[in-house]
Length: 212
View 1 (cartoon, rainbow, N blue to C red):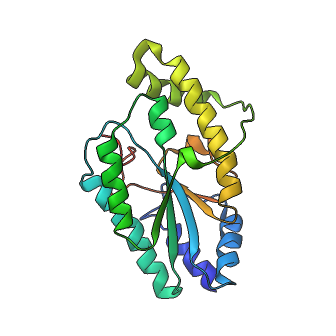
View 2 (cartoon, one colour):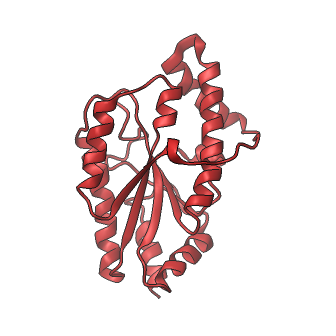
């Protein structure tokens, strides 16, 4: 079965951070595209932080996605379409506005014919108050404190609101897609309600490629 072959590539431990928990949902989504002989849609964030230029981590992380696509195309010719959500609103909330990095990462995406992008500021979603676990709250607070020191609370609240609003927009805009993330598993609470993959950055670190 082609869909099972594709799923086995996507959930390979070479690429996936944790054991897949939503096999059936992933398989159903893959089948949705296979039955129409269309490329499978993957959608995920690409952040903007304090990097000035695209570097080897960025390039090799994108190359790893293309490696996955190449393997899938051997079993299923349409392969993957990958859409990055450039997190400009998250960057603004955290006080980052690196236009040069943003320009270079867009140029990198545009050099691949199966990669598309959209700005988070172009998404339109609704905010619904959501309780998050103590574990995720601690992770987010520690991250916000590293950036904002003692003035972390307002940007943290704004970031959480953006993530929850984005999740609603992603569900509506990218219905029947697979969401992928380079975040830790605790972030699942603020993912869109789509089948998801938690992927390694190419060097298998815990840091997304857009972080220094």
